[in-house]
Length: 310
Image (cartoon, rainbow, N blue to C red):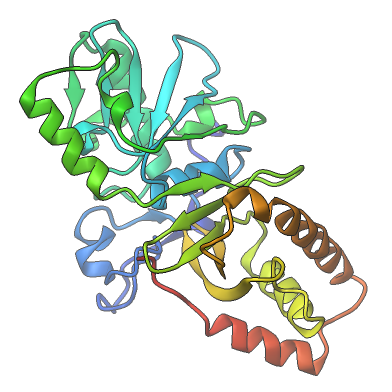
């Protein structure tokens, strides 16, 4: 039972005496109107220890339409989805296929436990059933870390629309209208693939294009390495890119670059790969060489560049 009851003290935060403070989950909302309205304990980094962590965070936070095979240890195959119809937490199709939703409404402080609870429900549910919300009654004591192979990464497939909601197609007018509404809010998004790179995604917001890259390093280490690269003029991904800042999501830092909208997402692969190498070298150098005064000032500047997703 060690994994299921792991010490959460180091990865949680409580309401304390200031309900107006930002919620530790990284939503940007006040604690009182976010997780503070439900559980008083928050697992800040719910997917820690899983190779799938960066893509789990991406699917939860900013991938509009994506699916991935969940690397469950046993049992029937499970498909993880960014969003399900009705923002359901889980559904079981008529053929028995199980799907879990990432972008759901929840007041729980532990997304990992919520997903494990939704999976437990789905494995017992009748075909054609849907679970709107994971409530306390659905918690089993398990977390994703207990039901997934921790060494297997996620391989999200990013879709251009939500046609996968209705396998085989459907001519029903209500279904067609639902898909039209959902498709209308999708921002074009694609994975940026390169050797050794995970969790990097290109997105076109309509006015700008960005690359968002979920990093798994400790935030203190990552900020120090970025500061070192900043002083070496090594923060960019190539011509047509500009480091814009970063945001926090589920215990991880997500750096963001503005990039040239006229370039295809695949044209950034080489720049992302080269940056990954520079960043690894910068992280490795920190043990041997402390930050200089200039690098510490650069770190402070970078720490002030917190951005809001649009």
